[in-house]
Length: 376
Image (cartoon, rainbow, N blue to C red; front, side, top):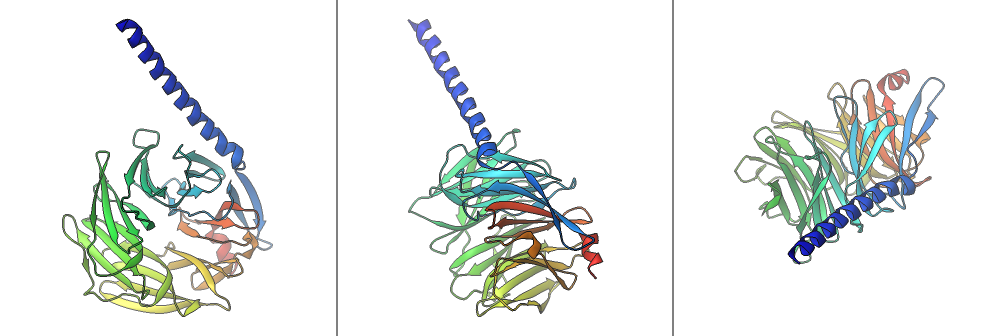
């Protein structure tokens, strides 16, 4: 009888493993079925240059898109929450050879998603069904871990960064305006509050050699505060003074300690893009773009000369790129809604990530700086 029980247990375990493998394979097949094949588009800007563009996914509406990274081999890395498949998806590749990986086989509505990378692995955090989940590919395939959010805490924003010691660290804001920081170590979350007297709704963290830098947006005023923390100490803020006031949409590019860039729209003027730079103790402020219509989204990065560049969308859905003091009209890419992302890859390429709301597709475009220079 004991032998029969053991045999039954082994058979049940084998059956469960088999069913899990079948379901996993089925989910990966679904992304090929429900999302279109990754297709290329030849888009001409003028008589002498064109843009390489690829459709990544078909969607119901604009998704939340993570940060966009480019590695030393010109591969891009990003993630998005698929609102047709109802799961988080990780994408990587280049030149049209992109792969899509489903990160979660338990399908539920979700939204926020953030990605971080180190030299050899990908780390993703996302929010669904009142849980924060974290996934990594440390073992070669993605494994998921979740943090239960008690007391009905709704998450307004989350960002994931890798510490200087290669620990994934998550910053998230709940619906009470409370900012928390959580380190993932040995398959567990260790969380704490970031103590501040501000009610905030958005956060941008950055890892430094000996700690973290933190930019947080205050809900009521639109003010942006900057703080930093050395390892095993508490966050210290700039004399409790805002580094930017009255901001609505904003984007941050952090270079290193005491060197950063912020582009933003003010609450009372959505047509001007303002730029604040902090270098070695000195603030400088500029208005770099003045448009004839409201701007609805933006993202910033640095070009090859470490100068600010901004990808932005106007209220009609058309996209524009501010670079080298000029504005490049990218309306040939079609209209967009939702987040946009911008990154400089290996010279001479830039990548743009956006949701095309004409074809309901998430798309990525490669832009050659040499072609931009021809427009001078």
